[in-house]
Amino acid sequence: MNGIADIAEKVRHGQRLSLEDGLRLYRHDDLLEVGRLADEYNRRLNERNVYFIQNMYINPTNVCEAHCGFCYYRRDPDQEGAYTMSPDEVLEYVKERWTPGIREFHIVGGHNPTVPFQYYTDVVRALKTAYPDVTIKAYTAAEVEFFHRLSGLSVEEVLQALKDAGLESMPGGGAEILSERYRERLAPDKASVEQWLDVHRIAHQLGIRTHATMLYGLIETLEERLQHMIYIRELQDKTGGFLSFIPLAVQPSRKTASLKQRTSADDDLRTIAVSRLMLDNVPHIKAYWINIGPRLTQLAVYFGSSDIHGTLVEERISHAGGALTSQSLTRDELVWLIKGAGRIPVERDTFYRPVRVY
Image (tube, rainbow, N blue to C red):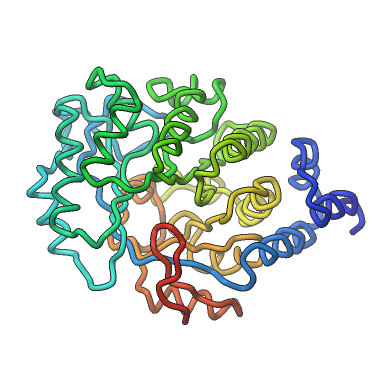
């Protein structure tokens, strides 16, 4: 491979890539060459399997004390459109949207200081009691850090209380870019880099498997993206608790925004490929169809992605920011996307245990 032949040799011999290697992959003029290398490594890990899950997104509240520069979902308590669902209302929300086959509730929301920490455990407990066979994947590390401040409990005590209520896994949100420069400018009210990592470290110690995201396309440098990946890689070396890494393309503030405000297809596919090659110890790189669209997600399986996420039922947060995709896809549509790429669709549970191979 002209230009990245030495990097390809490192990958093929199991040698870890450096930040400088990552920069060269980002700047290499042949996107397809980078993609082929990522696909080669992914197929070594996952063969031709591409995973998805039947899941439902639940956002119990959009009231939030944080003021992140990229979020259009949050509301102040007295602002028009603010809401907080009671546990019973959450159950009614699920009942109205329930379809057979859902195996996971994916729960994230605002950092709402007007309710006690018990509210958050009560939501989990109500769902787990009503749907004992559905896995609860709930609350980002940023939310957990907020619960710690809200309740006065330690992070470990917060996580144990949530686990006792029925939490079994955690989503990867709140990471944005793991750079203090970035967070001071765009997420000053949120968990710091070290706090975000600490929550995941403690969760892994408690046996809670988690995910990690990266929100790219705003003010971050390529070096900051790569350092973000290295932070995840280093923690994974110590704990082995991350199930997947999800690059999230930032969404513009409104649906009529110029396309120039969106990340390019090159950047989306290249970021997935670079993530796969840098994060050699994370089993799966996820292509998030909500943000990059179903068709680009289909291409992403040639660039190192082994997961195209799930059915969702009703996604709100990215759509509040201007996502142009639908709010859900059916199981059959996900299977069609994967088969159309010449790969094997594998329906999974939260922990990547196969449920059905199509």
